[in-house]
Length: 283
Image 1 (tube, rainbow, N blue to C red):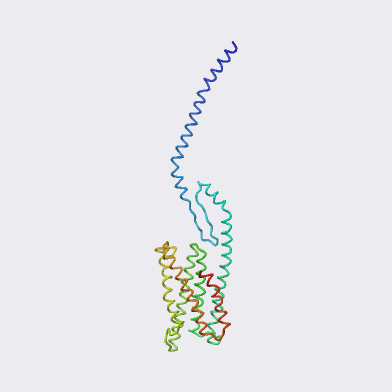
Image 2: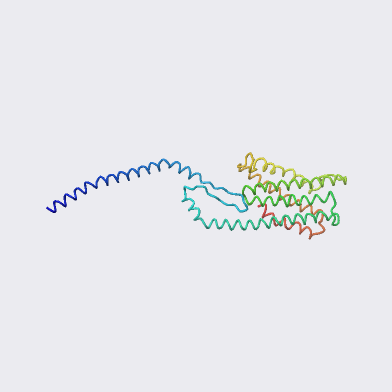
């Protein structure tokens, strides 16, 4: 009797709990289907947002890289795990920053000191206008300002590219005034123009230098360049300008040699820094 009663109670309990389990299973299945449906609907959106991973290089004093993709934390974690390359890049940037400051300082000091020195030698240590403006402005323009522009471009980035263009343009304008100074000086002395190798090479450089300057301003300027992503123009601008700068530096040394060839120490003091800077700046 007791066994029959316990069996009856067990059957009632199973009967009463089965709908509950069935209902719970049905609810869980509905939730899973809903999640799968939502996942499939948002799959395209997630893929779009994954593709919207943006690397922005901010041109501050130290370039920083930021990532915009809050939904894809796995990619951020993977990037955070790449410590050795980031560390190497930081060290490289620190070394480049140190070398950059040293080169900038040396360009300014050399242009100011040696530019003034060689410019005042024909007047026995005195400034003689308009001739003295020629070697001084050519040294400060072609060597100093354009040299600083070239190494600034090596740093890369938006701001450094604009600074490179500004320094190069200022350097060319200084060279133009130096060119006008020697032209006016020859007129005053009644001498013919462009009779020496130094004069002919200098004139050729001044004319040809307008090509990379125009390409940089019109085609490659980071703000309004009409074809700033053109790799062919960028390559031609880069190498043609470097060749002309090397020729200009050599012509500066040749001009100093024409004035002071009987003073080898002066030639050494003027030319040695240029020989040292050439591979660092133009290669």
